[in-house]
Image (tube, rainbow, N blue to C red):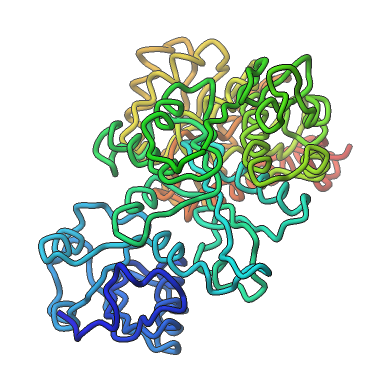
Length: 521
């Protein structure tokens, strides 16, 4: 393997450690892989990026910063160039399956494997806080609601006077946030099950967050993890070594059991959240008021008001799953010392991201709604529950999850279903078995530019006044789209195009279609 290390890997726990002489193979060249390579080069390591693909921009940037690049097919053996390079360490991007040939080779060769999160934790002291200490981390995971909760928590922390930012699986590589010259008091890090799979595996790399939450557990990514048990175990890693508060969902016993099984630091508390009346050491709802009975001295006899359901409705956060996200974020922010009045003002100024139960248009009594972010059954379930009569656009990559329970649960509220994507067979079979009365239309078009136009036309042909045409695919998007955002954008464009054409057909003058309005007469 490589030349002599300046220090054992277990001692590389600071930006200020001597990383020179370390040979690192980085697997993957997306935004995460590039952030890893860029960081390691800046630290003085010798870096070789190995990937099946990578954008031309990223390849050019690797050359600029002085990292090597080796294009190598995922299903090929170990390349001779990698053997010659002789890495002391492999850093893997999220998504690489544990049985990937290069990871199997690393295991056989006793080469340590880190994820980007472990590297970021080790070097989080690049920019110290005013008191000379490294930034704190708050960790967020769960099958659904991660991004909203991460953004909400960061928003609350900023409102409370802390320098804070969201990072991680939310789209901002955590290493980019760690190296931001402005520095932060707290990072709120969204973690996928992929990232958690590689965490807490190596001496010196054990995360010790201020607070952590697993919002919920439902079947997802089973094809990657191999079983539900392995998926749940990965999610449970979020609680390991937590110092102040492990936040869990009172409506999801699995999250409570993960807290019970976690090895946490002395004095760490278990804090529940739910939409019912809370017990001491929990956050909940009393007569339309969200309250904290956890972070106050007299929690057995009193509670602190955070906000109201009425105020949540004004912020677009009134759906039950959104209320849960608000409570979870509030618990995390309270663990960091944010006062209740700051949480209230933060919620009032918060707005949901695009593609999350976003109303695209309302025309002729039909609501067109984009929830492309519903990439699994659990998320789609929450969206479907919020409407009484639905024309459901569903399908894509099901990731090994059976859609039948979801179809059965919502059969009574479905006017029709429009199926898209490569995994239509499983959805079609689910409807035939559990909802034979529901009209099912299928989009045969597979070209990205044609799929949503066909889906919208099909939905429009069956939708009636009072219906919600809901894009909540319960599936990943990469079979036909770049990502869920691309899928959502194309849906919104197809809706507006369809409504504009419909206005022409009715001899009307088309105008811009905004949420809550149809084409102008």
